[in-house]
Length: 245
Image (cartoon, rainbow, N blue to C red; front, side):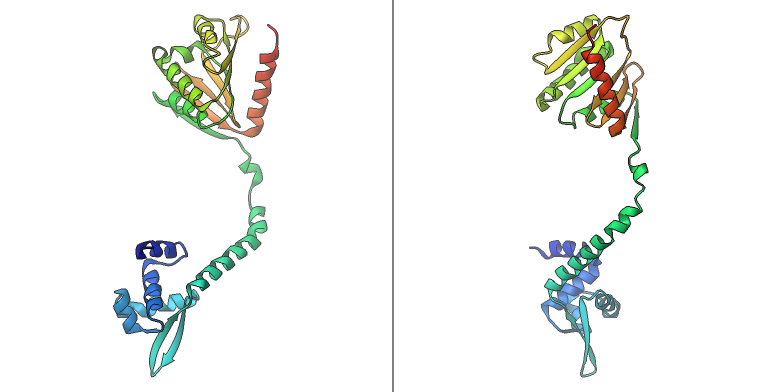
């Protein structure tokens, strides 16, 4: 492994660049004087004292006196592993108390992301493609008509490529009736409702533990991530889906 890579690993062990350089230099010639360390690590001699002292405090250097000169001895690399194991053990011991500080109620609050502008609808629907599983939607003819139909065709193709099925409920319209004709090849089931029962200019989608609302006309929408809310919406969707109309 290259020296540069080793230095990166050591930096992850809470060692600064010059501390890592000095540790490696001392390993290469244990024990070493300050002068020898400065030369090997290419660090000014006046700096070596301070850096070496910090390494002593971290348990990576040991100091000794010989013939009136200060020598430093780098501990075995195995000791680094033991030090990290001890740190991990200490963290595990503190974990129950750390968790007690966690505001669990706040962590369960729904997260809301707002989107607006010409890319809003694209960004919202792209998030549904990160989910592996069924997508439910109270849809709108505006979904089919966006960008003269090209946008919905592109989105549907991406969903099919992922193997994600969809169930959609929409109003009786030319767009939705044509969509329903392609259900089999587009991994979808479509339920069409009379316009006096259901009619919408927006789309509500439900997937994973999230739901979204898209306003296709005004290029606006939002995603809400929350297990309880999405679960209720899924139940509402299934009630409508299973109702004979």
